[in-house]
Length: 285
Length: 355
Image 1: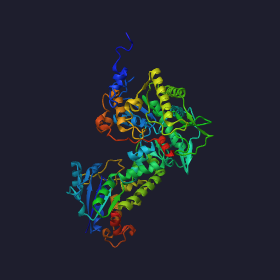
Image 2: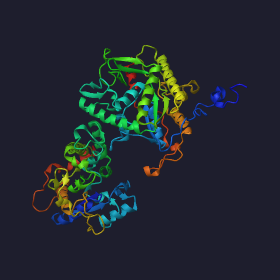
Image 3: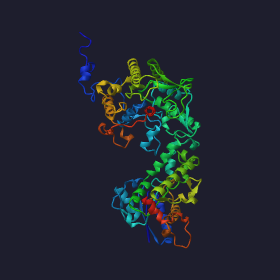
Image 4: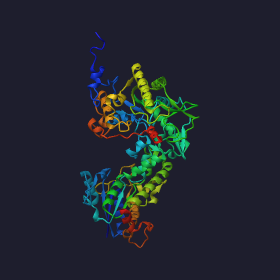
């Protein structure tokens, strides 16, 4: 049996529900979910004795709810860790580009500020480095050599194009490629220096490259007791359980062979990440 | 009855200076006009002006920042790219000529020449070369960045209630054909020195005075309510290209600027002068406020300058809480004491050319 610890913000709801749909295919895998809605995960602290603990009652309640009764994350209890959302993803960089762009990122709207490529790159790297997901991953890495995988925050659904201030999204195709390049650069550094991997993104969920198709967005569920409360109409940030299912299917093989589906089928991901020695060697380098 | 009878202590050297401690000058400065909590303050000038902007912000004054640090960029990195130093990203404006030139250019009344300098395969804005220390990718990119910058400068000048300008130098480098001046000589950060194209120029009192008055007129045409507060930087020249000894050149430069500031403050009701130069550089301070190089101003000196300033310009109330969830720093905690506060100062790079 492999135990996975999955930490995240409200996006964890889709993953938790998606996991329920497919868990029968993974009898050797057990997952504990630890969620904190909004920015509550900022209050997750290391107790320096091998556990991550909530430093606020609000977060504690969220963690109790999502984990089904646990109120601390004992790192030694898990064979692998995954972190979803919490600022990690291209969405964060899109928000940066709302106010500042390089000359080759100008689309239909003149941004308030032009910045140089050098400044832009530094801003992107720092922004990703300081997001909560990466901070928590680094805290775990400091205490555990087990695999750690980050799951990107999902692309917004196309509903976002109905927003009043949508200039950044109208220009997504212009700015996106440069943002993606910075994201990939950061991921390479993260993998090389910290042995922290990033799960593949479910490509079939994307439309117009930087949005999520309605089939994977509509019907998203809030991270509330019962996990049966729909988001309001017009919600574009959160995805539905079908999206969560796709994410979880890609996540598990990223950890390695012991986490694969027991169905006789070949895992979707090429086995390039399935080198256990690399986790430990890079983590200690 | 003598006209000197009954004057306040500040009017007598013994009472105003000899018997006062240089770290606690008494009644040295009396404000000409108040700065209201709601006033929008623009800052510009030579390196020393960075201290003023920083401390005003720490004391909750509303210092304009038209080109703020990009989201995500770390504070420590931002100043290396000219962010947060002043109210827009123009870098150091050492001379009155630079100030005038930038203002007229922002208002579309001046077109500088020879704006793009190169270094290897990189392109620099010659009028603010330090804001992109590694330059930009093309001449076109420099032009686009400059156009964007000028829009913000124009916006700053027309929205400011108070413009604080620190006069730094009289020495400058001038494009012979057009009169365009640059903050550094070609070849220091980028570009190549060609004496036929760019020449050394030491501005006179009348030129500095005229420059500032033209600047004032240009701004007031668009922003009649604006007022000005002048200071003179106590930071000596790192080097002079004028042929004189650097000490004499420094004293000339500072004397001219002090004279200009004094004349402007005496003759214009909307111009105040704050004596930071006197606090740091005059002999009663015995050089205490300088670092070992007798050039950089120590944090203790900056502290006395700002304390003297805030004694006259203390805000009645801290910045409204609605503007920030962070508690307003008290003067005691606002500026943690450092031996030396880091400044971005391209003029200091001239030191590297010393044999």
